[in-house]
Image 1 (tube, rainbow, N blue to C red):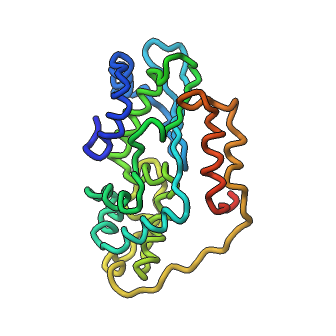
Image 2: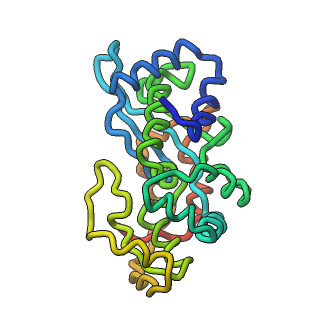
Length: 250
């Protein structure tokens, strides 16, 4: 159910030696019991209803989104080699993408439970529960069909990443239709891909709207969920959010 890229991510959870929990989670994910899987900066949210559940539970898995300086290093390395950009424009995860992130002192996927915070409204212990286990498998499977999901989880959305890579290469490309992903509306037609590799006109900068406090979203969590180890999830994420530059208002 997982490809080699996401296998270490799943193995991290399976190493908890909660075999029955993850066996059921794997079955529930394969049976389609994970609904409304949403990936945003730092946070994955899913609604999970297993065969023994009377209603759906909300499962959440959080990681630290990379800051602007960290992403700048990664983007510079990606843009330096055309093959990385070509794979991403085609909607493929470059096979050696981990090497780029390791070069910046990062890992794209979390490989230690110390990097992960999670909670579920079922409030069953020990954690992770079967709903979180199912979400882990569904999340890993989603990376196979949409590699941009993992970038979004670490704080860089698809269009923003492709635009930044285009700017770094000093070229112009319409990213709205590059490798459309499921459940996202298509935009204007993709321009001549050959223009991306040759001289072109950099995309015009967008005007900057008023800034919002980076950690404002965390104040909306209800009630503050507990991370792995009993620490409130919002308290773990706030320092990382405040380290980011202010984002645009939505």
